[in-house]
Length: 510
View 1: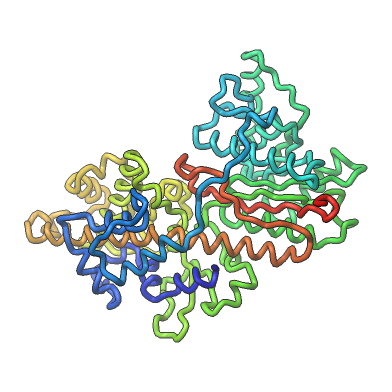
View 2: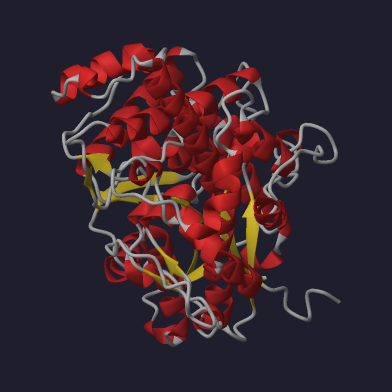
């Protein structure tokens, strides 16, 4: 599976599409690659939205993709974009009614740990708590787990829920003191609200917040100190969890788990990492050492690598094209085009996000509006599904959604902020306006193709991590699986957890 994914992403045409942001297309020096010719001319049509044909082919509203006059070169890519990504349907989890200490978030008696959450966060926390409860109750090897470490705990939503609903002892770690302070304030609010509603918490668990710079070393050290102070005279099984661990934090948690299992039992500091449920996010914050991780992918014919600061694409003239993931791949890995047509609100949001990218790119048609290359770390843009790419030299910055109502409105606001004369490019002339609309149609197609390829990029990253953990744990009797915890339609685009659990012993299976 990984070989097919990496081979597809290394294809010269696919590589050129992923490596070309719409901003670059409008640069005066840009020339469309020769391999784009068939679809580039096809997209030059303002009468029908060609991008919609691409989207409906990969994610048809009905059971089968519609027949549409899409260039064969693109059809082949679209078929792979439909077939190759990992399935993302959430797994069934035993309903809360079968778990006495877990209540649904729409219950009139919501546990205090769920107070203050957005619908998206409540969905994630309730699903993750139910899954962890099922995990601990259904596996004899995990029945003794009472201690959980929440890595990258943020405001402590999942930590409080685990304490209050499952009576677990939780160590909540975050690198940001502001997040830790916020979590402590939420603890106080939750406690006060539970007393006011005459539903005081009777949890037998506990919650400890701590701010640290999280590395494999500091993570192990913090767990050791916490366990030593609470359970000094026994060997304690510990569950590691993370709900959207950004960038390198996910690989670092997995490195901690792996390193800990490579240590002799008497050197583990009184605790054992028994299981893990890790949901990652923010691929754009990964380090170059975070991909590839597995020996299997390292040895593939495409020789994959991650290059975050290179502006060049791999050569298309080599016998076996190499695969170099760039910042563009990481940004696009967060896209969820399967949801664009799932509801009127999703469709509106997708069209707005596309308009933002395309219209910003069109500013490159004005003299003096060049490009600045550089790595971004815009988590807000990622969560909104916006692929920012290189910005114009004169920064436009963030605009209200209303600025994108019409092209004249956008152009007026953008030219005012960036200090250029919109009349220097005679877009008011009908011929030039037709050229702009034709370029806009092409950019919409390019944007859509790149977004449709995003889930392929994410699938390769996830499978590489899963394979790496399996390789490193070897014969240590651990199961490693990718589990779809959340419903992407709820807003939880990063819905895949890397789950590590002990295999049942032969005696327990007989």
